[in-house]
Amino acid sequence: MEALITMDTTRHYWHKINWITAFGIPFVLILWLLRFDSILLSGTPLLGMTTGFEYDAVLSIWQLNHGDPLFRNPFDAPFNRAPFNWLFFYSYGNFVHFAMEVWGLNEAWFSTITRFFTMIGSLVGLASLTIGLRLILPQDQSSGKWLSFSLACLLFLGPLHGFWSFTTRPDVWASAMECLALVMFMKYIEKKPVKAVFLAALFCYLAWSFKQVSITILMTIGLYLLWNRQWRLALMLSLLSISMWATTFMIGGQSYMHTVFFSEDQSILLFPFRHGIDVLILYTAKYFPIVGIFGLLLALAAINRGFYGRKISSNMPFPMLLITGSVLSTVLCFIASMQSASSDNYFFPSALFLTMTSAALFQAYATTPQFHTLIIGGYRVFWGIFILLLLLVLFGLRGKTNIQEEHRFLTKTMACLQPYDAPRYLQIQKWLSLPWLSGEGFIPWWAYYESRHLNPDKFEHNGIGGLIEQGYFKTLLLSPEVRNQYDLGSLHKYQRTNITCGGDSVWVKKPDSP
Image 1 (cartoon, rainbow, N blue to C red):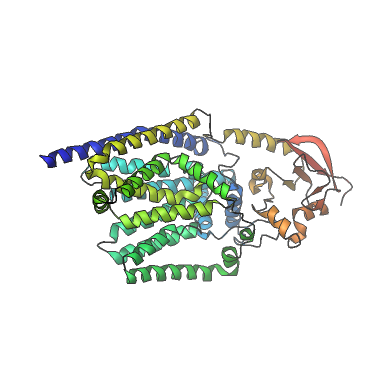
Image 2: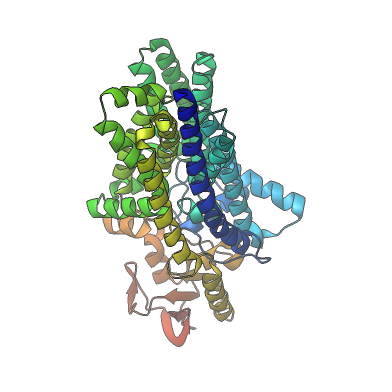
């Protein structure tokens, strides 16, 4: 009789969790579909960024496809360069080449194609996380399949990934590879440990190749093997990883190694604590159902460390791996997010672990009905707050669902610049300097101006300012605040017109200037 009551209570528990999640997921999918439709199905090549500094990555992929060296000296004109994430650039470059050949597209669609490839990465991550959650959630519960898929949608199609799913950046594919590494390790570690470590090392290497800081899963798996005294497997993981890294360094050569170990960006990164807190708050808001329930479940486990704590631990799949990964990834992600150029994408590894761990804790508490009311009530509140936040975005009160306004602004600015001769230099509207739009590609890398301040004498031609002083450009589009000098270079060869394009002042080269 007691067993029947427990079984019925457990079934009710899973039914509530599943339906709370199922109620919220449509709001997530509506926002994702709105962005998908506006960015990839707009019927026209969009101008404008979906994430910050996107034009840097788009330009590097374009240069690679046109035979330019990928890893180059950023102090040489045109003062841009690709950072270390070799698989990101080569995979995107090959996909763009393939898509243009198959679909007969011209270069106006270049950034749309790269964004489409990022979206494919989201679907790969969605599929892999669904499989991983099925390893954790109950196999005999039909709701487990839908809950696995729903939680995977929340991560890879939800607002945390947001526009990162439709941008030209390595984060989504790196996250998908890290997810595959974790899932393969969990799937095979008990029965085929050598295969588990090999696949984990392989996918962790691919994640690192997409984005160099994607090493959280590798570190967690290594610590897990050491904790369980599986010395041979830990050594195997280390040797495989070191071998693949060393091979990459040898093939990449000196230019590649310079971007990894001696990048000019590293000397100017700031680590303001307040910025890290702001990013953490943004991450929490965009992933509130999981962050909230993870905190609640972990707090319950910590408070009830006696009988119930042992019972929960014994019922939780992969407790040491997932708890260690959640804590380690969140701490490392927070530290990384304090750098001045970071955003909520730095918390993708934390979100992956928190999702897996929350699912495992759901499973652990299934046989402790004393906590079901609190867990279900808390989960309902977390989702309710999250849905309200989503509605603010959907109704245009916060955030945005598309980049149509920026597209219209840049289209108007580009038309305004058409009467003026090339070569042009655009101080602010960097997207319009992409080669197929202007033919120039003078887009200094994101840390250019900070590097100019620190190393003004290292730049070829004395940087952009030196080229301006020499009269290289025929047209300049500069901030209205600029007067007689720009980037340490004199503007004596140019005259400021009364025309503004996109709010910036148009300067033209004087007719008598050489």
